[in-house]
Amino acid sequence: MAQPTATVSSTPLRWDVFCRLVDNFGDIGVCWRLCADLGARGHAVRLWVDDTAPLRWMASGALEGSWPGVQVLDWERSKDAALLASLAPADVWVEGFGCEIATEFVAASAYSTRAKGQFEYEQPVWINLEYLSAERYVEQSHGLASPVMRGPAKGWTKYFFYPGFSTRTGGLLREPDLSLRQQAFAQGDGQADWLAHHGITWAGEQLVSLFCYEPPALAALLAHLDAAPTPTLLLVSAGRASNAVKTILAQHSAENAAGENQAFHRLRVAYLPQLTQRDFDHLLWACDLNFVRGEDSLVRALWAGKPLVWQIYPQDDTAHVQKLNAFLDAIGASPSLRDFHLAWNDIHSANGTHPLHLIDLNSWSQSLRTTRERLLQMDDLVTQLVQFVLKKR
Image (cartoon, rainbow, N blue to C red; front, side, top):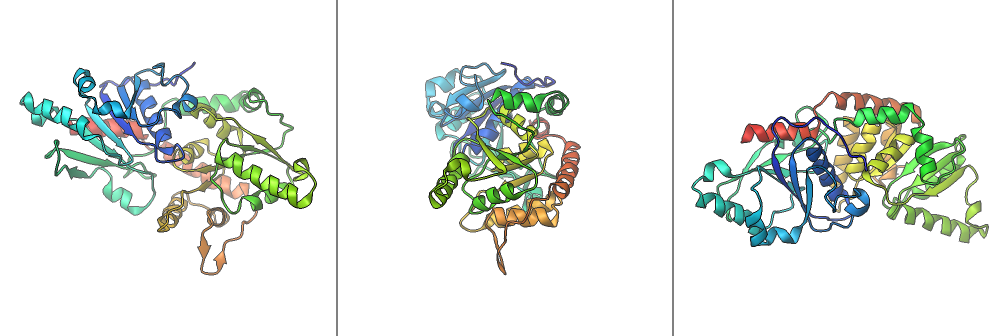
């Protein structure tokens, strides 16, 4: 299996990256891309994760050690004193999204360092890799130090590292060869070949990808696509998106007694299998419009440079509303793109629910192309993270 290629780092480091799956695979998706990118650049990475199952389809060969520089370990083994004693100490610890490293792991390093009398010099650079946001606090908090006040590592320091959309943040994950791969896909028959590889018959329709939770506006979206002047082939991701679409089709069939195949006239639906991360990139590159959810797929859709609609994960305290609006500000969203996002995310205004307006690919394309070009001028997250670590050592 072909793996990402990248310029090898002039200062290879050893990394311990920790990840706990909360839900929906977003945490492991980001952490795996980080580890794979570091490994491709010549670093040695140990990924400690509490559920390795998603990697079997997300990154084929990851559990077998076939990705350069990356070793996957079960989270529970980070408490194994015998194993920890046998491992080479890491230069960097990364807590993915605030997950707390096991006390046993911290203690094994802290006590070993103290025993050698080199407490000040051998402690790893300890990074708390935060969630992606365009909100103002990100620029203010990026890179800040947080002293460890208790536990075996009392007196050590953690640093907050924030991905983001401006030069005052840690940037976004982007492999060094991403643009070249994307150009090769666009210049050849990548689109048609990818569809054929997945057994999808394509009659030249507009291509739209759907990766979502269960948005209340989903039925309205399907009706919009069916009523559009251009026929559409909707490529639906496995899991919650497929289940949501099938539920709507079943309801439509029951209400109309016409059978599922009669649900739409100008809209066809194709259900995708679980895709590797690289295949998911290809899906986004192939489509004219991408509906994405969470953090990892949002970043990949930005790099695709196509019009996108993001379903942000809803929070009970409605903090996601401010986060979504900050993102829309960051990409210079046109009024129609902003309104569509608010409707898609079921966000109400003072006048009630936002209706799902018609899709305007022309204006949306301009916003996303401009944003992509601006982001490409920034150093990617791994480049910035390595530079940050080297300054702190």
